[in-house]
Length: 281
Picture (cartoon, one colour):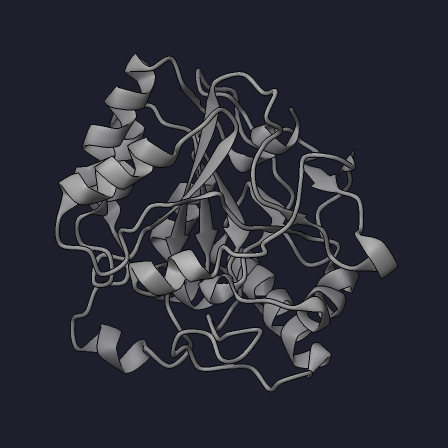
């Protein structure tokens, strides 16, 4: 993603509300969600989506309604751009299996926003995450290229090329299917959080709901897990949606921060939910 200051700036003007929620089938090309029974809260078989915005634009969901109970959705972006294969071959790690193991140990439901390139690089991990009923997998693009430029230094898809944007989203769903990922939900997160009406219009045929956030975790490029934890704990309100990362090289202290965040939020009376449940309030 981006550094904290840039990522926080991306929040300005990000709309969306809990209204207009509908239950629609997953977009074409995405695997069906069919989790097995578990003590965890299972994602609905038909995940909720929001109604299209004005002019048929892709809707944007930022947080649950203010009246919601003390629920919070932790989301983790599994970032890897299309051009980072050589860096992975040299040993750079874009995964974070210790973080996933900690979420399981702490019994935390979460939503993983995964790029298609990440799923290709780590197919066994992607499949295991999708098979775990504690998690749901959402689309974070295939390439992790920006859908609106400039976007904090990210490579960008061609400006105004709606077909390229739609194809990038479809390619990610195809990568999930190729890796055998289950429990895929029809949600999409823009790389870097950057979008405009052209991007929302381009994604409309995919029938996804764009998911942003109201709490920036600040873990991107951070080196102090206590500072990340403090920022999350200071920002969470009932219905909050937190953005964190599942990319060890770019967010090395996330797992440590989660070990502080989770017990403290539980002490405050919060329950951890996936985005699909938060959207269904």
